[in-house]
Length: 258
Image 1 (cartoon, rainbow, N blue to C red):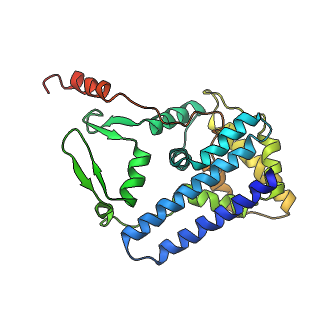
Image 2: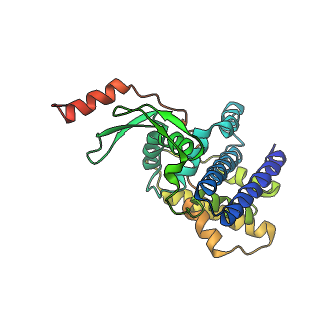
Image 3: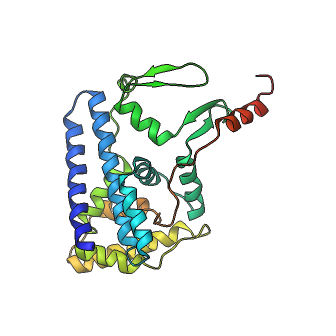
């Protein structure tokens, strides 16, 4: 299984690198934004499949669920999102993941002003498609044109993490064996500190360096240690469907006169 996984990870990493290189050559903001969406989607897939190696010694059911997540835009988006935060603990990460799973949520200056749909799905679709959007205030057409005036974003933390992982040989068959061996018994609980997963990431890199007889770039080592987060194999990533009437009642309690 690890050899097949290695082949796929190498192809995904190459695709992400090619897409990121293409973005630098595209002058049209809308086109570059659409390419970035695909690049991040593929980076999320890479990280999902790398977690298959981190849970390779667990039950077949858990591995099967993890593999299926590679086909979910929401799961990929969550994996991209968690590279952008630096949680102090696994519990803090779980809280962030739960927010990303919500079908709808309240936000605004007072945290309850407006109802928004799932932020991962909304951001992705707004940059790819023209859609008719229903909202509490006014139904309207949403176009990727609304992103045209924004500057081109730099590569996401997820895309850069994938590049660093690939350069350090994590996705080679031997690299995946090292990952499977080191991470097989690592099942984080809410109290677990970030320092514990960072220490295991560093140990992974040290073993990779010895096996490949290579000295890795400091930037790659720092990026992996700071952005390759806790394994999410044991975490629920499916969408949480939120009752819109409950959100409206929450707004009503905050603004009793509306």
